[in-house]
Length: 105
Picture (cartoon, rainbow, N blue to C red):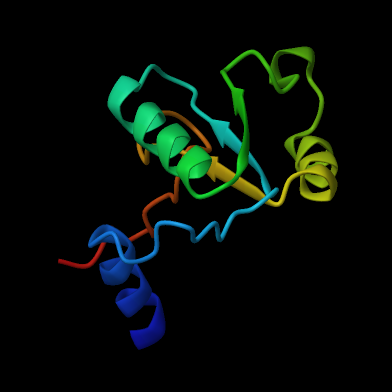
């Protein structure tokens, strides 16, 4: 964990300008509601880190056709290196659901 934090600090300080940890990784970004700032931040970060980006909206993943979420997930897991869904609370399936007792304080 220390190495990850140190790398982030070095990257933010401009000491890793040539670093491309997502070089050629295919990153899918799923948003079910509008989210200009978060979507832009994730997109810009992916591209700056060397990733290739594909974005999905609420009608792009065949949920409206009745296809099972598990079937879509299986296909995406074979084609994408990373899938970012968010932000949490933006709709069903976007981000983690709180546990039955709620999030710890």
